[in-house]
Image (cartoon, rainbow, N blue to C red; front, side, top):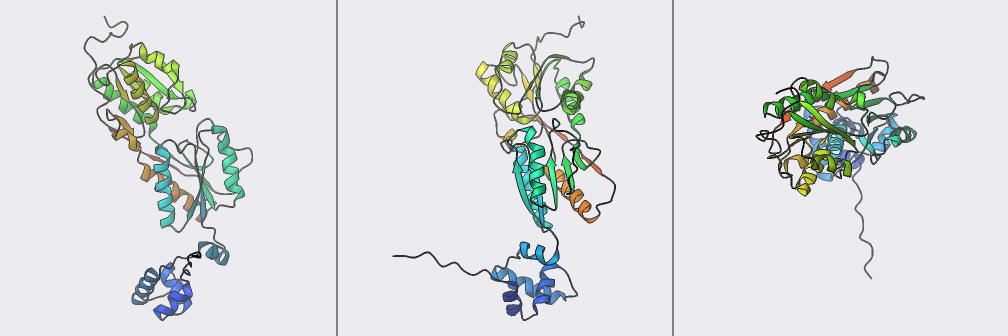
Length: 343
């Protein structure tokens, strides 16, 4: 009978030190960037560590140094490709800084976000990054004992990273107006409070006096659109549809195809986020690009700075956006209905 394969023993710091001909302390300093170690010794130790496949034991280091190297990350919905991309960027940046990441996905249930943050807190993470939805309370009734950075929602209590959502909405409006569109539909996310939806607010502001919002629907962020949206689109009374994110826009592309509406010949469709799917759907989706890597780097920097200086003032970081033009938007069809009062 063939037995279980014998597992190879992981290389230890002692193995690295012995192979490199240095003390354990010198090996540790060489690998961790500390001490007054010469460049030649440091390079030799690192070469040996790589050859032996040595991996530092972060848990043991935490016990020895008292420094927690685990961070929490709470995301609202990993089914939306935007969030895995953000998570990947945060995890990579955290790993480069010597941290591991504990991830919680609330599966689109906004009410579970605060519970998820409390769970991260109970796990003793050093700090957490929270991609918060606007439907969640801004300030928990019991403050967190860990540092927290919020992504996506302006917050006066915690460090936060936001994007120029309002400017992105304006960019979409200017783009569609330049193509001759004057009658618009808006498909907004139901989880975003009406008064705080900066994307649609910016879009509407830019249209003032130049275009008409014929209808506006709110629905969960999903490619599966409800019958109410399908019925609105079937009326064919708008020539351009502004969607609150790319998932909604891709759902609109699918619904238009089912209804026999030509995109962009009869109706232009635009999204927001520039998720990976935006460039591979047919037609390619015009959208507003969020700089995911920049957001991840900013959030992690704010969190690590807070860990280093818990008493510093709250900081807010805002990143810009850019319009990405693809094939889902085109010139308004000739003969579109004029705006009221334009006769």
